[in-house]
Image (cartoon, rainbow, N blue to C red; front, side, top):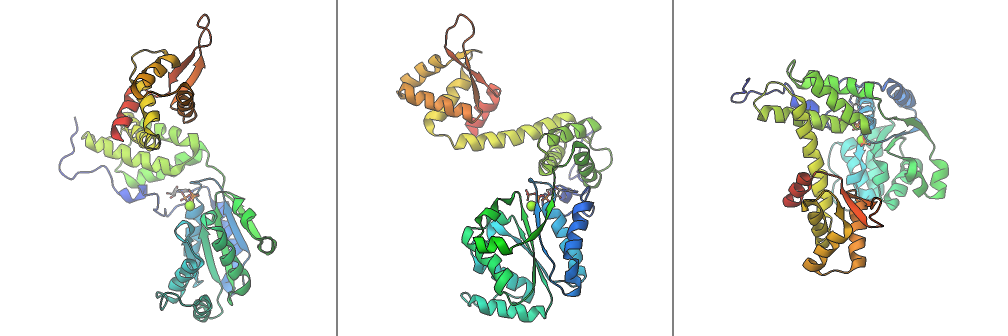
Length: 362
Ligand SMILES: Nc1ncnc2c1ncn2[C@@H]1O[C@H](COP(=O)(O)OP(=O)(O)OP(=O)(O)O)[C@@H](O)[C@H]1O
Ligand SMILES: [Mg+2]
């Protein structure tokens, strides 16, 4: 048996598994990168480029591609500002962040009128076009969304090229009609990755993140298959890192399929404890009874009888609880088999140990 001693590790560079890590090689996004670069090219000669919307499901490389292209623009002295919208609550937040980036200092004092901030930004830009990326733009509150776009498009005093990034186009419906009619953009779609593409993206991380031959092909393929179910590359990075940690914990020099299984369970447990934490005490009690009963076939009446004697609750309320557990996919409800009339039976969707463990962790 191979044992890992002291601070020996399987990771050559653990950073490549960080979801925020910007990879030097971006796979299968040449079309989007070129499209974005071409749209923004006029800014190199000081002309206002058209606005762009990058749209697609989570984890399809939108943030990665935009940050890559912004980096290239910066190399050509184009001023760029990248903003994560979920942390910006007011228009003032947005413009003071832009001020900070463009002017290289924090705004003079809190509560400086907006036009003053904009004036100083304009001075610093010296006629150059400012490229502003608004990542996860759909998270901006209505007022802020409308106000900042209106400022960029109408009253900023300097030229702005907007790159909006979103999972869907639903934010457009929140624009005031006038704004909706003047905010034109070129759309760049980011489709889900295919299984082959996922494999290539994750293989690069394996090669750069682990020492050679650490990940067995079987374990790697298991991860690729898991990720292919929903296309979430971030999940793949998480599985790779945690499988690596599991193998290290076992003192193994190789990541085997069992390490992947355990990494997957860890993730499942996290999701389960989160959804159980959101249940009230009666709902949790019902879940506990269902998952601790020994019998394979559980009639709803049996669970009701126990619940009634323990917490004294009405039949209607009991059915609400059971319905909720079904909707949350903790259980399935089926009608009794032949000869057993219309008794409803409860089928557990997880193994008993998993839920009992999750209940204990709350
Ligand atoms: N084409 C790619 N090549 C290499 N790595 C990629 C690629 N696409 C995505 N990734 C990696 O997958 C993760 C998610 O990508 P990214 O953050 O760019 O997705 P996103 O589309 O912005 O997702 P969200 O909508 O959830 O913000 C990142 O860690 C990123 O490095
Ligand atoms: Mg993103």
